[in-house]
Length: 271
Image (cartoon, rainbow, N blue to C red; front, side, top):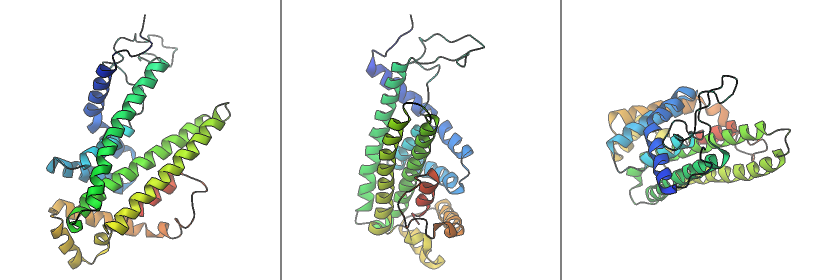
């Protein structure tokens, strides 16, 4: 008989984390290929490059949070589902798949949340150090990459939750899901505001993106940016300046519609 629950939790946790780590790069490539946002594309590429150059950077954990959050789906053909028989029925939606029983799906989802939360706590601990350190002229760039990745994660979670509510429309569970979703969105909106406010008002990290070329060159030197990072900053600043017409008045009101599009615009407000 197929298993109906995972009994060796430590082993399953290790297998889940190994699968996430092994699929991280492909997940990042999937995000880059699926997004129409050139700023996110550039930021993911630059964050990966920066993380490879700085082994102890919290950007590594921020990238894991962003990519692992996109991996909320049934795990197939992994160590966890290897004992589940493959469905060989061409009329079934599970044809040639290994669908998890509901409780195993819940256990896997819970383990994934624990893994993401562990990296999230590491990121927040490090980003606080960057925000309140005495060397703000050196830490603004790493803080920007981290904050932008976290904002992108909030945007992804918002869109995912809204699709989940839409799928439940007209069912008995819609009211309960809609109520929970509204509390989620309020928390995520507050989190985005906190991240942006600290980056702009505490770290003053957005100023470099708005400086004249000669002033920006000094800031780049203080932050020890290499030529590729300088090019990235210049490209991002130009892209966001082109979008400035969307910012005017976009943030004068709270979320009456609570859309992922709103959070996407709010994420751009970091500069």
